[in-house]
Length: 383
Ligand SMILES: [Zn+2]
Image (cartoon, rainbow, N blue to C red):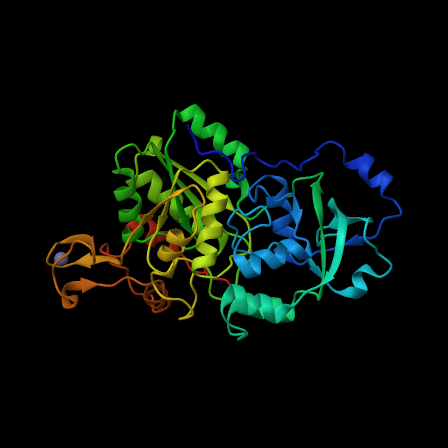
């Protein structure tokens, strides 16, 4: 059996086909145009990716997430999902009102029924979730500079699904569950990525596919908002397509895209990303070194420990550092390779980017040639 949705039931807050009616009914309602983080979250709440959440968090829910890493029901939950607007955007709006949500091209796509309006304590969120109030951290910078100071809590409904950076790969949890079932998969291991794959990633994917009982691999690529230096969504998708087509058994791998803003909250982000993958049907979840980290804010294995502390009903597959070893003559890991560090070719995204910038060929010990070709085309990184 595929894993059950988190909290027992897959949330669905989509009401496609009722757009005209809702807009007509809401003619007098105010419209807000949420910041991109909340824009993406609206769609992920409504398609059940964030089950059991049905809307943006009220104050009590946010507080229990901040203080206990749990929802008020007691279920572990590690990342705030709030809608923070500037107070002048909602002048005259009160609790109980319906507010229309609009995209940046002004196209309305849904609404929120407001249960609660409350003040956002930005410093508290930054320190509790990201462990820092330093705006050098990309999410803290957003929180401080781009989030409003007023939160709207309440259920969200979406009446139109808009195009996402993931394109045709942007599958909902109901869609992946249907695919897994048609493939006959019961035990599915999910792999989180937000960068083009190098061979050490492929190794973790294949080692996980070797685990007895695992039927398939779900590669789920976070491609939402870009920060400076990130690979563009199309580059991530194309390079994974090339990897899967040339180096994986295609009938054992499904690729999907997840357009959300990446939360670089280290262990808390890893738990959140795994919770989402449970909603997509995954039973197992791959965690390598320093998942969802940025800079040196988190320890390399903090994410591993998080899964000892909180059980979210998905089996973590924890891996140590992986690299090419000249003596082993292949990709291996700290856990199994007996050779010293001088035999290792460490692979980092920074190193790959430097080689690309200098126009140097990337060796096959680091990246498959089909992937390297895509990365060498130029114009692959956001500025
Ligand atoms: Zn070795």
